[in-house]
Length: 328
Image (cartoon, rainbow, N blue to C red):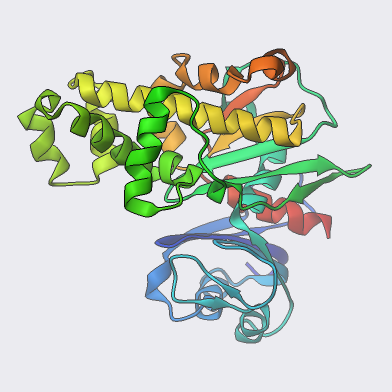
């Protein structure tokens, strides 16, 4: 490539997206982009060097969205045997600035460059152009964060809110809490809404009436990703029990999204990211998610006008890292 660029990255536990962006060009389309198997590299520096050699890039700065809290350096990555050290990366690529963002911070910034085709509205609402923005993203874990207006631009709000305590508010949800508490002790929202949460909800409902589980679904659950199997059977209407589990999951996901919207007073909108939402989009659009979102007692009306959108673009964190890098 031979030009000075910003190299942005979204580092995940299994795959990493890296891209070079030319800040002199309009828009945020990458000049070049590559995907790598994260675990194939001994360090983030080795991975970045491979990308730079592959693309002949000369980065003026590197900005990486990384899994885990970015409070002090180096960062201990979640689900990776890496210490992510900006100094090690800089040395590996021959010098230059290296900046780290939490992956949810990167996703939050990425919402600023998404187009209409990158989003699916669950609630049109009335957007406040300078209002706070909330981002919630269920995947392997449950990420929460947002953006606040700082006079001339948005600044990210870091959070580990997914680990806050699950708050049941019906007899069924209290029984779910008891079921999960017996296994885990503390029951966080991540236990309920992150990827394994759907399978946990299914198991809870099944143990209340074991005879309702079909032999076909039981066999399928033994062979693959259990939450994915439950959602597949539910969306295909092949199991009443799976459908009930996905209904409850979508409702509770909406409840916690609404909680985050209230805590941030997210008049600028709520964005639902992560890998799960696009896969169950039909369920999120059928009303159960928004039923949970709006179930806030005296504050129902206060959040009814908040726009809620599902992020469909799986490169949002990558775009957000580049966006933040261009602001420096």
